[in-house]
Image (cartoon, rainbow, N blue to C red; front, side):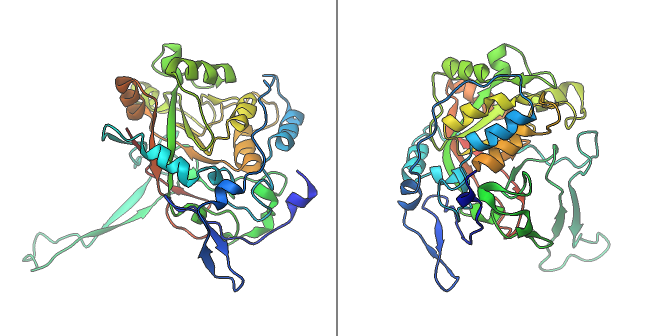
Amino acid sequence: MKATHLRLGIACTLLIGAIGACATAPDGETEPASDTRAAASSPEPAPSYSPESRDLVQADIERLMEELSNWGRWGDDDQLGTANLITPEKRLEALALATEGISVSLAHPLIIEEAVDVPFPFERAILGLPDPDEEPAFRGGVSDRYEISYHGYSHSHIDALCHILYKGKMYNGYSQDTVTAEGCTRSSIFNLRGGIVTRGIVFDVPRLKGVPYLEPGTPIYTEDLEAFEEMAGLRVRAGDAVFIRTGRWARRAELGPWAVSQHAAGLHASTMPWVRSRDISFIGSDAALDVVPSLVEGVDLPVHVLTIVAMGIDIFDNQDLEAVAETAAELGRWEFLLVAGPLAVETGTGSPINALAIF
């Protein structure tokens, strides 16, 4: 990354679900920016795609961090990354995909029992439980309290751009020093509180290969992604959100839980030039995107590092892609309107999320 891209900046960039972003006013308050800002602030086209060798080492990941970098592409103060690619025109294009009125959730039911792939299950407590021995009140009510440790391989969530660091830096060169005990003062999930509205595509890799699910540790290569595009009769375009189905939840339902953090099907790091060349805005899978083990000696989660830190792509982890893949197969179309809204946590490293695919 160029030295000018490593300067720290102060910006409050806000993705408004169907409108635009926000800018920092001179007095430190925020004010709406024009709808054309995101579209006009992307002067550099995506690079041409060159196939990457499957035999990668740590030096190759360091090289790709430079080659695939989006640092400075939308300005030195940018905190949105590739979410900038979702313009008002892109949202309107995506809205036109909702032709059947079918809505499918991508969120897996929150798991409340500890398992080898769920070290921190979802917890809840019912508050104000009615007493069966007392006369019912004129107006009663109950509530509950939730507790969730969502990062990892258990619960459906989205990673903020401050979630992953590389050599003490996060996306766009912000220092790890901007993360305090209060959370991320730069590139937090709060920047996406306006929502995500774009074209979504589910890549059903097991269906491509004629199996119900991929075995843990199976790498997905660029030729698999391109083969699925050909089979589905579509092409990923700038601003799209791509979801990679490995069949993780189908396998779990059939065979039971396993240590997904140690063995998971997913993208091989060699697919990253393809991802960059298509200018994908968001990416995700039914596990944590990376193939595990990574097949890159000495480097854990290289796909996480390259997407979040180098390219500025937020990741959807642990999405349940079974129903959306089945719906897509029944309809014969693998694209849909994606709508998702993270929690508005001002300094959050991510958020639990219920993304919707609307056909």
